Length: 235
Image 1: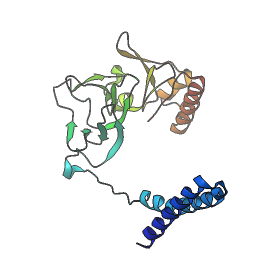
Image 2: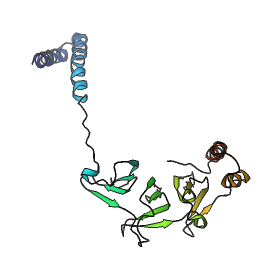
Image 3: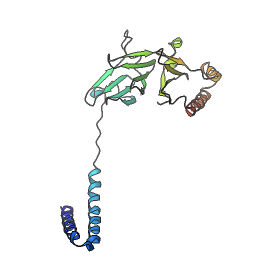
Image 4: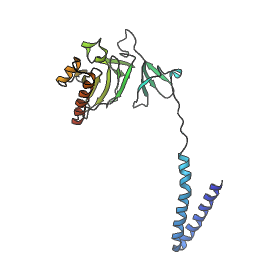
């Protein structure tokens, strides 16, 4: 109430001074003074109005989420939130949640329920990295096309366990798997091709060197690829 009264008085004084300034140019200094006073009074009010307390809501299995352990979240061009979990993929529209899971015998379902990463490419295609392969979402049919990156090692999970998806400056899609291999997408043939990365990768895959050296060598290689612009990876 007190602040409102001060504001009213200041506005009234400003109006009076403004009126006099039309007649007498000597009042410009006073007009400037009152404008400064008005700004000084209004600023705290504006700041106070902007400092409202934030409230958060959450969803879990009680509200339809497939699993409470979340591994990744992405938002598509329609505003849907895609949520990867330890047990299924979720599409949340702000009110309702749709769950996608692997269905035995259905090759158009997810490759696996364990979701590691989600990536939306430059054409707004949604790629889902799972424990056992990469899935491309088909929005028309609401199903998936699965890519086994290393089919020859199907029974070795780390060969098809997707750990990273990204694009380089040329919009070429790259995928990494836990085994350490790097694949790039060939859109003309709609398949992924393994990128030959040198003899040390072969040594790694044969487990000749230790895990620590394996990780160090992979980081050095990827760093070189990123700096050259060949590949840019996101988790």
